[in-house]
Length: 226
Ligand code: NAP
Image (tube, rainbow, N blue to C red):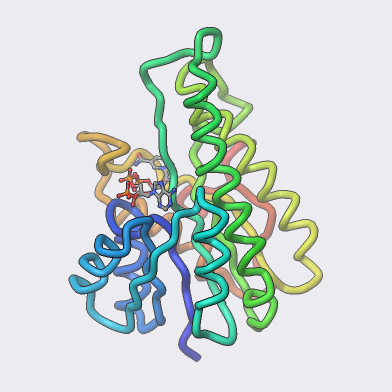
C-alpha cells in the first residue's frame, strides 16, 4: 500500500532529498515548508505524488492548521527534519540565549508539536514511523563546548525520541533519531557527503519493518552512542 509521508523543512537540503526519494519509491509525499511558495516550487521539481503544504514548525497556529487541513485519513511516516542555528560562532559560556531559545523552539519543540498534532493520524496507520532528524552534535557521549544552541536542542530531541518511543511502542509506532552524517547542504556547508547519502541514512529509519528498533539513535543504520 502507498504510504503517506509528511516531511518538514522539505524545500531544500536533506528534507527535499528525502521527499524526492520517497516520491520516486511510489509513496505519497506531503512536502512542507514554512513558505508555501517554496514548498510549491520544490514539489514542482519532483516526480510522483507530491503535495505542497505550508508548515512552520515553530508556529503553533501553523501546525494546528496543517493538521486540521491535511486531507488524509492517516499518516504513515513523519520525518521531523526542519532545523536551524548550527551555531559554530559561539560557545556555551557566552551563548546568546535568544539563539538557544530559537533553536529549541524549532529543533525540539517543532518536532514535538508536529508529532503531537499528527498523532491521531499516525495512530490510524498500521505501520506508523516517526523519524527525528538529529545529529551526533547532540550526543552526550562526545559533547564539547561548541555549537551550544544546536547541540542542546539535538540532545533534547534525542531525549524526546526515547520518551515517545517508550510511549508508542505498544501501538506499533516506531520512533527513532537519525544522524544524516556531515552533509553538503546550506547548513552543513561544502565538504560534506552528498545529500543523497544523508537522506539514505534517514530513509533507513523510515523503511524499518514492523517490530524493528524503536527509541534508538542511528547513522546509516548503525547505533550511535547517546
Ligand atoms: P538546511 O539545508 O539548512 O535546511 C533546513 C530546512 O529546515 C530548510 O528547508 C528550512 O526552511 C527548514 N526550516 C527551518 N526552520 C523551519 C521552520 N520553523 N519550519 C519549517 N521548516 C523550517 O539543513 P540540512 O542540512 O538539510 O538539515 C536537515 C536536517 O539534518 C536538520 O535537522 C539538521 O539539523 C540535520 N543535520 C544536518 C547535518 C549536515 O551536515 N547538513 C548534519 C547533522 C544533522 P527555509 O528554507 O524556509 O529556511
